[in-house]
Length: 218
Image (cartoon, rainbow, N blue to C red; front, side, top):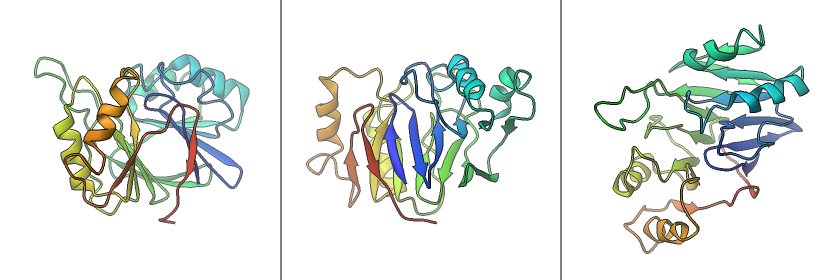
C-alpha cells in the first residue's frame, strides 16, 4: 500500500487503484478526501471530521462511502442515505477492497471536567493502525502505527510509553498540525534512536503531501 500524509491526522492509503482516507479534518489538506472510495472517521472533533470535505468527496464520487461511529453518522447520514455506515469496537468490514478492524471506544481524557466523546481506531489490512485521539492498543502485532505525537490530551512521556507498549515495526507521526517547524526536530530526537528508547521501532515524520510504501499483514 502507498501511504500519504495529508496533514495533521489525515492519511491516505492506496492499493490496486483504490483509495481509502482516514480523518480528513479541518487541519488536513483541502483535497484530502478527493477521489476516495472509502472514508473512515475516528470521532467528531473538527480536526478529524470536516463536513464540507466529506460532502465534496461524496458529491464528486457517487461510489464513495463513509464508515464512522454513531455520533458522526448522525450528523451526515440524512444527506447521503445508504452511504454512511456506523461501526464500533470489535467490528470488521471491507471498504474499497481494504479489510478494516475497529478498536477502541473513548477519546483520551483531556480534563476530568470535559466530557469524553466516543473514538474508534482503524486497523487496515492487518498493517496500518490509526488510533484517532487515543492511545488504544489493538492487542496484537502492528506493523505500522500512526502515532499521535502532540495533543491537548497528551504529553511526550505518554507517547513514548504508547510506542513501547504497541511495539510497531515503524511509526509515523500524526496529530502534529499544531506543532511549529521548530518542534518537529525536538520530537524527532525524543522519539529517535538517541531518545528515551523505543526498542526496534523506527520513528519517522512524513511532511504533508509526502508518501511511503507500507507492507505486511494481508
